[in-house]
Image (cartoon, rainbow, N blue to C red):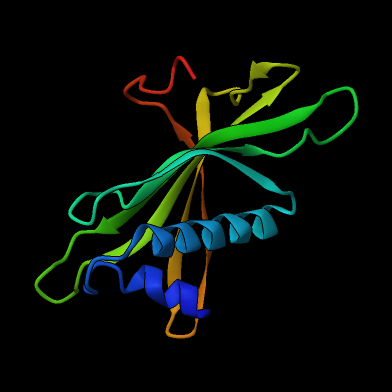
Length: 148
């Protein structure tokens, strides 16, 4: 795990971070997403909230270029920091969530059974490792992403 990963996962208990520190963390997480996907990631409108706000950073992301010939597959989405709620035996845990929406030839792609997006999280996997977890295709149960 890198020092930047440690900063992200300690963000709930550390003194408030500066914008520069959150920019560093966001850049690191986006770079790791690009490595995990095997394609560069573009970030637009990445915003850093004030220390007392949640999420700490959030914004729109997209594939830097289309993949494949005539199908021109690409994706776009949203990323932000979040936390798992604490329980009496487990402390609150910071992570990053990302929603990826696929498109081809300028149209959004859904699965045959109506699943709308891929949900990913960037989490501390062990004491010395952090990485992306693929939670698979998800249904847009509340219609919140219909117009995306």
